[in-house]
Length: 137
Image (cartoon, rainbow, N blue to C red):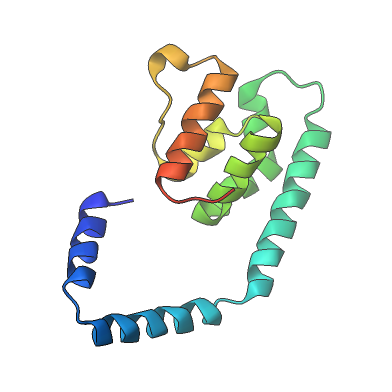
């Protein structure tokens, strides 16, 4: 997320008159209503199906490389940014091996080098990263 762009947009919005802000708010509400709720439900169902398949087919596998190359895992990565809150939710619920997917989608790694290998610390770092960017799990 580009913080400079967000700061610029915030300043612009704050400079609008009350009437202009009201019109902008209405327009944004219209845009949000145009996104089908069914599409989100479908996305969540697809994600849940892929997670279940991945867990079942990787039971007993210890290789992170092998697990992350599994077709279901790769399909989750292929879902792109839409999968981020779902992946963060999985981290919050079960820990799982979702760090590779998150790094692949976001192209960042918020885990400090000294915390790598410490699953609970890595989860905290990713959940904090998500909260800072407004993701809801």
